[in-house]
Length: 158
Image (cartoon, rainbow, N blue to C red; front, side):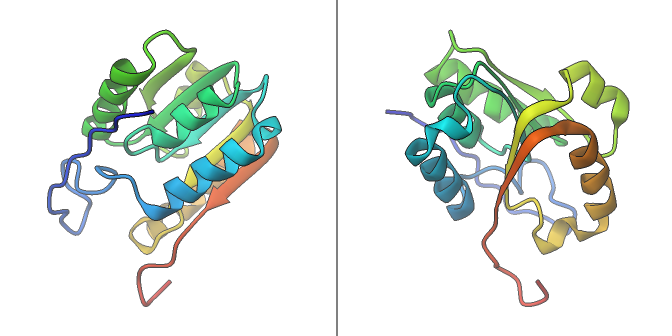
């Protein structure tokens, strides 16, 4: 059983200090359940999670047998929340949280890109639409074998 700390702060238009990513969203639950039901997706593989939020999906990948998992987010407060959740639940796993701004090739290389599998939930939501080109650049450099995206439509313009 995992105990996930969440941080519920009203988000501003730009996703202020832990406004976005501070909770476990439905798409993250669906993605974690998919990994749990099809563990061969990550078993024995290196996994990168983009837009980790609480670290929940990355922890699911580690529990399913991924050999190395890096959960990432662009916001330092979100990375810290994920780090705290990892420490509280799985301190001895090959699982770590790090900051990654989409499109930052140097950061991607520091994290060990490319990865066998890249997972992400809700990274294509409307608030991130201005960053889609950067997201695509990161995906092109970081995905070695498989990309698994999960998304729930929440905004009218999506």
